[in-house]
Image (cartoon, rainbow, N blue to C red; front, top):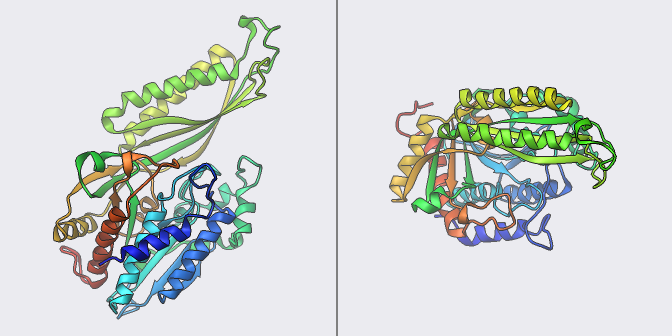
Length: 419
C-alpha cells in the first residue's frame, strides 16, 4: 500500500519552492525554482536507489534495473513547473505519486521483469515562452527545439538563455530523443483540472484521448494617435480590432462545442498603454483545443477569415506566429484496459473520459503505449492558488499507478504481448 505519510511529507517539502505571500506558487519553465524542485526530487529518487541522468534539454530520468535489463523500461512521471500564481498540485501530484509507487516497490523488495523509470519533464507549461510540453516534445523527437530558442519571456529573457542557465546542453538537443524500443509503456498521473470526477463521484478518470492545443501569437498593427485629436473615421485602432477578434474566437468555439472543441484568447498586450493614446499595437495569445482535428481546423479557418475581414475594414495589419499545432492523441487500449483492471481490483469508482488539457503523456504516446490517470481536484479549480487535491485522492491514484506499473513491468496486463 502507498505510504500516505511519506506522500504528505514529499508534498510539504516541495511546497515552499516558489511560494507566494498571497498564496499559490510561481515556478516557471526553466526557472531557478523549477531547477530546485528537480534537485530535491532527484535526491529522493537517488535515496530510493535510482540511477539519475539528465538529457540535453534538462529532463531528469531515474532508472531501476529489471530482472532482464535489456528489456524496454516501463516509465512514469510528470512535471514540476507551474503557471504564474499556480497551485501546488498541477504536475506535482504526478511526481509525488510516481515517487510513492517506487518507494513501495523498493520497500517490498520487488524487482520487476522490465526496468522502471521515473521521468521529470522540464517546461511543460506554456506560460513563460508560449510553448507547452517542450521537455517531452524534445524527448520524443517531435520538434526541433532550435526553432524555439530565441522566443522571449515577458522580461526579455530568451528560452536559450533560461535553458542554458538551468544546465541544458543546447548543442546536443537531438541526443535527447529516445527510440521507441527503449520504452515498453509510459504512465502519467495528473489532477483532472476540471470537475467531472468530483460531480460524478468517481475517484479515477481513465483518459482515452488527449485534446491537442493549436496556439498562435497574433500581432495586430494599427496606428497610435492622439485619442482626442483623431476623429473616429480616421482611426486604425488595434485594440478595437482585437476586441472584434476575441468575440469571433468565442463564437467559433461555441459553434464547435458539440465536438468538445474550445477556443480562448488568454493573453492580451496593448501598446502604448496610455489612456489618451489610441492603441497602435496589440498582441494576443490564441489557444484552440479539441480531440477532433477537423473541428480544430474549422475554428482556425474561421479565425483566419475573420482576421482578413478585420484587416480590410479597420485598415490594420496582422501577423500570425504559430507556436503549436499538435494533433489529438488516442491513448493505448491495452494500457487503458490495464488501468481499468486495477480500478476493478481495488473496487474504485472510475470512468472513461477525454482530457481537455494537454499533458506530456500526449507526446510520449507518439513513441510508446501510454496511459493517463486522472484524480479529482476540488471544484475543478486549477492554474490557481486555490487548486487542491486531497492526500487521500493522491494516494488512491498512486495505488492505481503502482499496480498498473507492476502489471506492465511484469508482463501481466491482459491482451498484451509478452516481451
